[in-house]
Image (cartoon, rainbow, N blue to C red; front, side):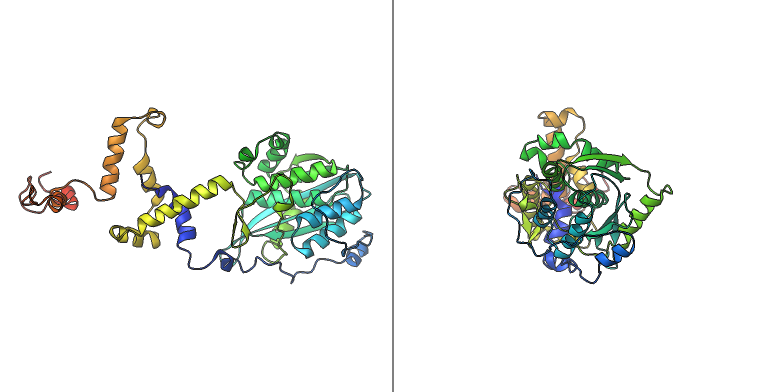
Length: 383
């Protein structure tokens, strides 16, 4: 059976003329955008204590027995790759270290820049003191849900140990994920990988466990005139392209001992599914590179073939019973469809090439006018 269901991955990876890293010129942290300094926030009514940014790198294991600012800062250093982003988060965390009940409005946005590259922006602001706000961006494996998850995750990084956090979001998927977090913790590694954005959920679970946090999620209606929600939405949209990038170091999480990377970029999906899909794409590429399929390859490269519709047509099951058991009728029908697709129907022209001693001529026996090829099979006037 032809592995044509991997057509999309083939188009996105096999046909690329450059390495993946060359398509992400904005992957490195953008330092053009300066965060407001602590003096600016102080002028707005927020007093920010000094934070020692030059502390040594934290160890791989963190103790949560002492509810101090060091645990919060160490977690930020452990999980955040960009120094500019981690510095900003630690400044806010230091200012919030004495607050044990925090309410935060969060939002995320999926945007497209001038090069049509999808980028994610996310931002949040503290209800207790609106002077405290944060925004950043991300570009790897973009989705609107992931953007809103990153907003919630970054808020959990700055709250102190043993705090009660109330997060306001317009993402029902994110709220559902938080509600199922206890169930997620008890899943095996194989089942966890089947959940979308499972690395982010592992990060959220690890932060909540280390800090002993109590998290309450409240759903707000998007674009409903809520001032604080609209402000968080504005923050997210403004920084989608220009803000520093937030990248999570998943290998520092307990429970993740290995990760798949492409051009040093982490694949944020199931390792089993990724490997399976890559092999299917490889087989699909081999199929297209056959000399006999030169026309199909050319049409594929110019996106003139709808492989989704083709795959559905070739693998369509007549009834539900055909998917659960061996159906000889379905097998014969599928075999016939694949022979048509690959031009392998046993016409006289093909049989003569195989056995010229048995088939002395290849004239159509219906019209006696033309060679019986597969093309003629559909055009024969006698049919």
